[in-house]
Amino acid sequence: MSTATPIVRSDSEGERLWFAGGGVHTWKISAKESAGSFILFEMSLSRGKETPLHTHPNEDEMFYVLDGEILVHMAGVEYRLGPHGLAMAPRGVPHAFKVTSEVARVLCFETPCSAEAFYRGASDPASSENDMMRPPDFSRVVESGKRNGGIELLGPPPF
Image (cartoon, rainbow, N blue to C red; front, side, top):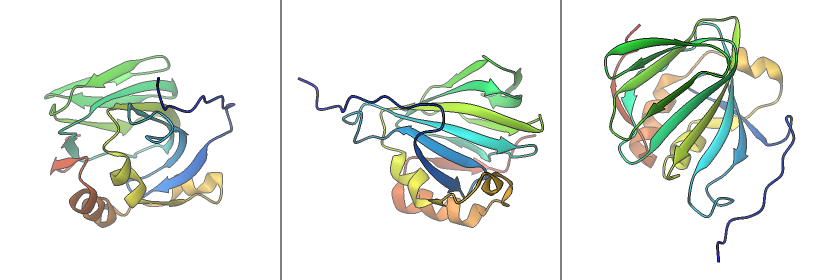
C-alpha cells in the first residue's frame, strides 16, 4: 500500500515560496506527500525571467504552460510554448527557459523528487504576489545546488 497522502487543492492553495532564481512557486505536492514519487509546483513568473543552462542529473522535468509564453532551450534547440504547451527534459538533458510574455504561469513536475531540497534551499516564504517581481539572487541558487544537489549548472542562459 502506498504511503502517499491523498491531496485535493484548489487553484489558490499550496505553500507559496519566492524562488531565488526568480518568481513565486506554489507547491501543490511535495516529496513527502507523494511518498517520494514526484514534486509538483506552479511557477508565477514575470517577463525576462530566465534560467541558466542546466540539467537535473537524477530527475525528469516537465513544464506545462498554463498562461503566458516561454521560450524553451532544449538540447540546443529553441521552442516557443504558449498555453497548454508542454516540454519534457529527461534527466541529464541540458535545458533552460525564458519568459517572453508579460507574465506566465507554468506547472513544473519532477520525478523522482530528489531536487526538492535544491528548490527549498533557494527559497523564502512569499509574502505577496509582488514577490514575483523580486530580482533573482543567482548566488543563492548556485549555493543551494552545491549544498543540496538536484541540479547541475552548465552555464549562463543560452538566449
